[in-house]
Amino acid sequence: MSASIHTLTPELGAEIRGIDLAAPLDDASRDLIYRAFLEHHLVVIRSQAGLSTARVLELSRVFGRDLEPHTFQEFHHPETPLIIVLSNRTEAGGKPKGLADAGTFWHSDVSYQANPAKATLLYAVEVPEDGGDTLFCNLTAAYEALPAAMKARLDGLTAVHDYLHSKRDILVEGKVAAPPPGVHPVVRTHAETGRKAIYINPAYTTHIEGLESAESDALMAEIFDHCLAERFRMTYRWKPGDVVVWDNAATMHSATTKHLDPAKHRTLWRTIISGDTPVR
Ligand code: SIN
Image (tube, rainbow, N blue to C red; front, top):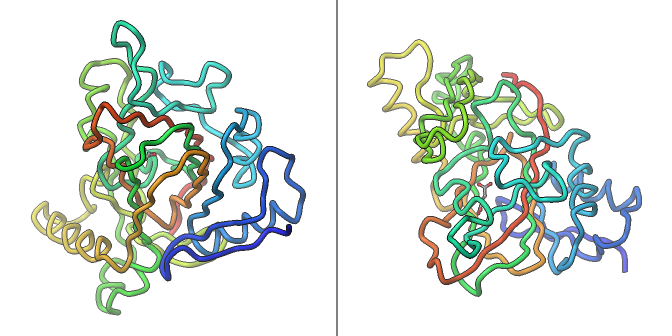
């Protein structure tokens, strides 16, 4: 069976069918997956239960050569620091087996870094029948739908992204040092497609530079309202063995794990594919 691309919603995402990730990927499959990723901003490959860490790393490298270990070393997969375990399971004694909530807030991964993540991959090891969905929003479509006057207003603006803006407990507990804030264009041009996307997010963007605080807050609130309209959004309901990869230069996302019943178990592996400095 040859691989094929099937759109998930008119605005966002594509499912790739006819690929078995347990076997090494040939060049044609790699090209097809990457093409779908660039065009649809998010790709899904279902029914891949039982993948090894090596296979997950190989698939991650379809999207970029370099992968990044996560800051929270305590949740690295025992076989490799390039996979972080997201899980609400605990060991006897209550020690968490993974990061229970990777971000129940709208964000683009590590946007506070000078070189934020290009892409993120999640692999569903175990997921409940319901709950624990991941929400996505298409920031390219949101930008393209802006009125010309708003595009002109945003053109050339830059914004500050700070990890501490989302007040993460793990930092408050002093387990890891806060990374320094980053500054990026409010509208970024995709390095490969040349398409523009909004590049601010509620979790990490503290303010737009050069504006009074009230004006910056009002402008960001207006943009976030626009981006989070139903037509730009997609809810992903996980099944065991699903692989989802998204483009952080074109989307933002939110976990919902903060609201997940602790009796329902959810364990995913995550990799981060390194990116370049965002450009206007
Ligand atoms: C993430 O924000 O990277 C994880 C999303 C999720 O756990 O649903």
